Image (cartoon, rainbow, N blue to C red; front, side):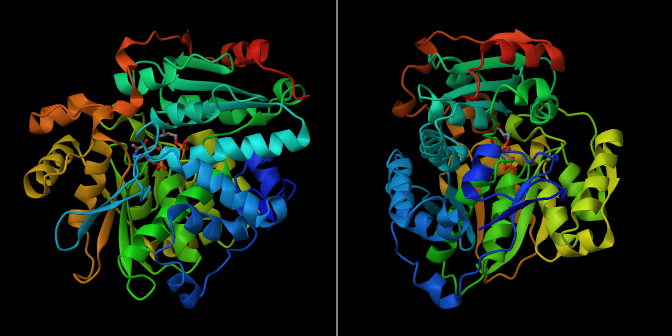
Length: 466
Ligand SMILES: Cc1ncc(COP(=O)(O)O)c(C=O)c1O
Ligand SMILES: N[C@@H](CCOP(=O)(O)O)C(=O)O
C-alpha cells in the first residue's frame, strides 16, 4: 500500500513511513493511493470475530508489507488486551433505533485509546527496526494527550511533548496527563486555544532547526495510523446491527474531523453506511461548511465539551481532497489561502461529494444538557457532554426509521463530572483503573503561546534522531 499527500508534492511512502512521518513534508496529510475494498461476502465473514482479529483483518490492506499478518495480529491483541470490556467497544441500546457505541473502556477513558494503544506499539516496532529516536509533538484539547502519554510513557526511543491549552481542559483530563511521571514525558500548558497549539505542532514538521536534528513524529489524527485503527469500530458495530445486509447511520461528536473521517473510510471500503452525522458544539465551522460551503474559522468559544472546542479541523483536508478529485496542487493552493485568511469556500465538487454521505447538526449548551437528561431518564445511561452532542444530532436526523443510528460515545462521563452533575444532579465516579488520580503530584510547564519559545523548550530537551 502506498500513501500520497493531500498537497501533492511530498514523497509517497509505505505504511511504516507514514506512521513515523505523521505529517507530509509538503504540509499535507497522507492518504492511501486508493481505497481497499471488501466484498459483501468478505464483510459477512467478519461477523463474530473477536475485536483484535477483526482489527487485524480490516487493517491488513493498509499495513501492506510493513508487518507480517502474525505481527499485526499480535500487536492488536496486545493493544486491545488492556481494555476493561471484553467487547473492547460495546454497543448499548437506547431505544428502538438509537444506539451508543462505547469507546471509552481503554486506560484513559476516551476513544483515543483505541488507536493510540496500537500506535504506541507500532512506534516501538518500527523504531527498533530503524534504531532511531522519535520526538513526538502533539496538541490536545484534553483526550489525545493522556491517551498518547499512556501509550508511550517509559518507552525506549521516544520523547513526547504534549501541548494543551492552559485552563481549557477538565481537571480529570489535565491530571491524566500531568501526573504521569516518566522521563520521556513533557507536558506544556500554552496560553491560547487548541487551534493555536495544533498550528504550532504542524509548523514544527517543516522547521529545519528541528527536523535537521530530531525525527519529529505525530500522535494526533494527522497521523494516518490513528484513523486506520478508528475504522475498525465502525465495522464492529455495524456487523452487530446486521451489516452488510442492513444499512447503519452514525452520529459522531466532531472536532478535528478524524473520527468521522474514519467512518468515511469504512464506507469507502464497502461498509453500508447510510449517513454520517457530523455533530458539533457551538464551535461549528464544520456544520457551516457542510451546510453552505463556508469554512471560516472564528474564535474558539470554551464549552462544557472542551475536547470539541476546535475551529480548524485538520482532517477536513483529507475529505476535501478525496471528494474534490484528488488534485494535490489545487488542494495545496486552497489550503494556502485558508492558512492566510482563515476562511475558504468549498468548491461545488467538494460540496456535492461530501453531501453524498455527510449531514451535520450543531448543539448548544441547552441541547447538550437535554440530551444528557434524556439518556439518563429514558435509558438509565449516564453520558458525557461530547456524547450528548452526538446524541442530540442523532435525534434530529432525517433517516429512514428502519435504519439504526449509532452515536459514538467518545468519553467516559467521569471525565466531565461537573457538566454531568449540572445536567442530572449525579456525579459519575472515576473507574478504579485510573487509580488515585487526585492524590498524585502534577508536573507541567506553562509557556506563552509563542512558537519560538515552545520550539526552543522542545529542542533543549529532545533526544536527537540517532
Ligand atoms: C471526547 C471527544 N469527543 C469527540 C472528539 C472529536 O473527535 P475528532 O477530533 O476526531 O473529530 C474529541 C477530540 O478529538 C474528544 O476528545
Ligand atoms: N479532541 C482532541 C483534539 C485532537 O484531536 P486528534 O484526534 O487530532 O488528536 C483531544 O482531545 O486532544
